[in-house]
Each structure stands twice: as C-alpha cells, then as structure tokens.
Image 1 (spheres, rainbow, N blue to C red):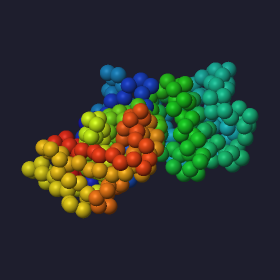
Image 2: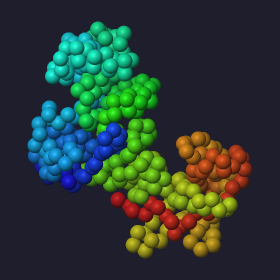
Image 3: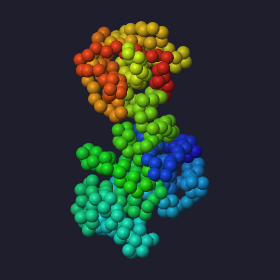
Length: 334
C-alpha cells in the first residue's frame, strides 16, 4: 500500500506489488504516472512515503538502500570515467576477497561478452557496450532484485533492439527478479512475464502480456497499447476472436448501450450482434496469432482482428464477421 505525495500531488497512490524469485515484471504507463517514483521507493532512495516494503516476511521499509541487496540501472549508465571496465564492475565487490572478486568479474565479462575490452575506459566504448558494463556492475553483488529504469531509451533503435533481445537470456542466467520500467508495450512484452500498468499514480492492471493484449479492460489501457477499440466477435464460421476496431464507437456506460454510426458499414445481425462483410487486405504474424485486416464493403471502415494461423483467410477473399455487443470489453471510460 505505497503512497507518496509531492505537495498536493499524489505521485504514487496505494500501490501494492508482489514479485516472485527470478520473475520479470514490466512497469508501463505514460510519462508522469509514477513508475520511476515507485522504483525509487523500492530501492530505498525516497523518503516521506507511507506503506511497507517486505522481503519474504521481513519488513525492510527502514533498511538503508545500500543494505537492501537491490541492483539499479538507469537510462544514464553513470560509469566512473577514470575506471576501466573491470574496475567499474568490481566497484560493488569490496566485501569479497580479491580472488573471489576476479572470479565474479570474469564471469560477468563472459556473460556480457566484453572480455576483450576489460581494460578499456568508458570513453573507449560504444553506447551499447557502456550499457552492458552498467548492467554487469548492477549484477555484480548478486542482488535479489534488479530495477531497470528505461535503461536503453538513449540508445539508437538498432542497438536497443539488439540489447533487448539479449537481456532476458542474461537475466535468466543470473536468476534475479527484475522490474523493468518502460512506456513501450512491445518492449515490455519482450522483457516480462507480467505487465503492470500504472495510471495517475495507481496500478490499474497487473497480468500476463497476452492477457493484457487480448483483454485491456479499460479505454485507457487500450489506448496505451495503441488500440482504438477492442471488441470480441464471432466469425460467420463460428470462431470467436478479438477485434480491434478503427471505427468511431461510443458507449453509454450507465445503460450499457452501444451506438455504431451507419457510416461504419455495420448492419444489424441476430440478437445483440452486428455483422460486417469485407475484403481481406493485409495480414501479418503476431505470435501466437495472425492479425488480419479487412476493408468493409459498405462504408470506409477498416477492421482488424487476430486469429489462429491455421484459420487465416487468403488475401483478397471476402469474409463476414459478427460483433457480439453483449461481450463488449472496452466499456470503462477513464
């Protein structure tokens, strides 16, 4: 139940979060929603908040940051410019004997594949290499929890994508629980076993990436994931799938009424359903589904839905879908 205010503004409001050993959580949300503040509270870098932080059954709320066994990695890698790669990694290992230090450093250099650069200084490294060193330094003391605050945001897209592809394997090798802060849903999916969505200081969703994608529940979360609308529907062959509608839809939450304008190209079906007929225009693989785009024959609506690979219709074919209004998923407007 973590709550933290800056003046009259609640940066974090009644947030509760649990993480299992070696589990990877992605914390996503728009700028200013409280992600970084929550991370700093967990790390022990913020004072004046209400709530408790426990490790297993032990309360560590008052434990100083340097004794929490929590690793930190920020967007700015903040390596010591006067120290070599080896010396930067060794910074948090003073409690170990020299031989143990060297063993751990060699292990981490192999892990981040920078052994040949061990004696270089930060200014002699690329941005991606510096981030690898920063990651190794964070992992060096074998923390029980690693906090990553948009660590690759300042890197070029190609370098960021390469590091993101490697990171889950690196973390799995260390068996460390991880909270990864980002505002990018695709990045979160690459990284996480669970995705936690924050909005205005509160946790509004905490679930598996696939569940979040298929069932965002609220208009805010759907927009955060880049969806205009999110509707389950039944195809004419009886298959039930999830649709993402690029047409104007409004909902009256009190009565649960759904209004779809005639220009959307939808016509009334049996019971609480509408049917749409269109031509398959585009399709691409989005594991574990294939996303199919159709263009309505009546009107200018474009309609997207996901379906199993085995059921994908061919490009240019005509398909009819039925939208089930009684199972509308996005009905909560924030």
